[in-house]
Image 1 (tube, one colour):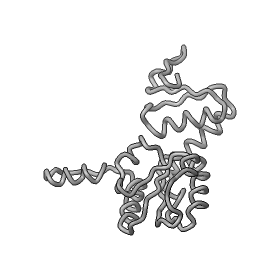
Image 2 (image 1 turned 90 degrees about the vertical axis):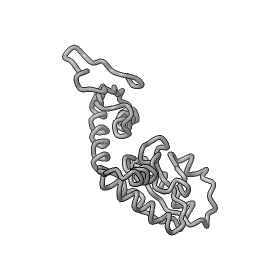
Image 3 (image 1 turned 60 degrees about the horizontal axis):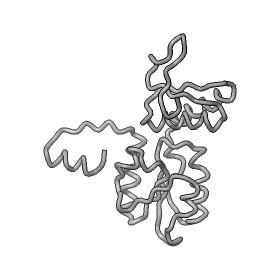
Image 4 (image 1 turned 30 degrees about the vertical axis):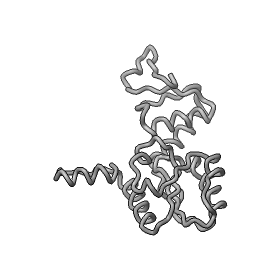
Length: 183
């Protein structure tokens, strides 16, 4: 949740139970620390993902979603900057982006790929392995989940058609009822 939501809850004297993933909380802490050091935060991620939408230092954050954006980032080379990554990005996706950013900004500080969730990465690796030996990959999960969408993309990138099933009960002995956009 965003700092504004936490602040509003405190002002209203509401009890807050923080169920934030520990890795996400670590990235949030890093963001606050880098912002206190007056660094520009270069956040590698998808602009519409919750981790990005509810950023800890939105006024100091620049979002970079792909290699083209990394190459076009308008930031003076000498700007004190820090690198953070959305935890649900894949190591494969971030590696090239991080490499471009580190080449362009040699004084860039931050962990790079160490903030990637390895549970998510392991599942993406499994999809990649399965896709190479399959005619079709069925991904069960929500269409608004970054992890689910990424698994669908991994199957597509491997050249195997994916089908997204929001619920396992849509898989029946006679087939499946897939949903858009990959149905």
